[in-house]
Each structure stands twice: as C-alpha cells, then as structure tokens.
Length: 82
Image (cartoon, rainbow, N blue to C red; front, side):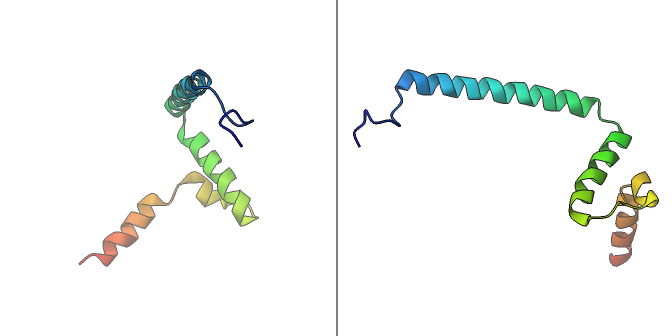
C-alpha cells in the first residue's frame, strides 16, 4: 500500500482533527467542572449507589445510603495504629 492509500490523511486534515480533539477535551472539562460544582452529597451518594448496584445485583441498605462509611473506616484504621 502506498502513502496515498486509503488510510493516508493529509497533514492539514490531521491538524484539524487535533484541534477538534483539543477543543472537545476543553469543552468536556468545562462540563465536568460545572457538574462537580453543583454536585450535592445526596447526588454523589445516589451516583455511588447506582454504580455499586450494577455489580452487586442487590440494592444498598438504608444505612449505606446515608453515609459513605469513611469515618467508620478511619476509626478502624486508627485502632490498628499503636
């Protein structure tokens, strides 16, 4: 297959694609930051619940819906330290 083959793309087209990807990445980053600014603890727990429910096959307990368990985990870790 020659350089002029079906997969060959001229340099200007490659640069245009790179600019498009750069602009798209910046736009997606702006969306991500905006979503994080408006994220509430309730929305975060719901998102975590949704993700964990995908793998677990059963819903989370009411206790798990109220707290992430991080404080309890840190308390357990502190017991392990002399």
